Image (cartoon, rainbow, N blue to C red; front, side):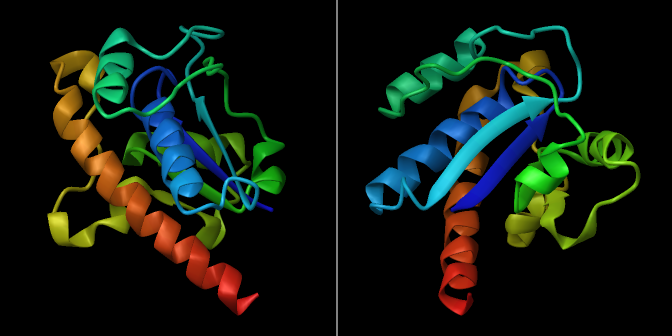
Length: 157
């Protein structure tokens, strides 16, 4: 079982969108039992809340389920529990490294490292600008790239 954790600030916009999209893609490739996906936030403002209405709307438009998802905090144990820890921006990466006591390694990286051809360093936070469609575009492309990386890593294992 490969475990993936997506991390953003409040765990209601970007990281749950990535969690839902990655689950959807894994199921479409008949891999839902080989890949477990979760998301978490570095801030505690929205603990227990479902994804933001903008995230839910764009996921609904694309037929992607977010059922049962609720915001939670990143915890230090996540470092051992997940093989891929994908931070939606560089601030999240810095915060996650702090939570992990400075440990990071190759399993902790930013989401946009999956899409270097885009020339974008961070997934913008749609909580502030409302551009959920653009974030979905980035998330879908990045999740596809991550899924290919995971499949290649699984084939080598």
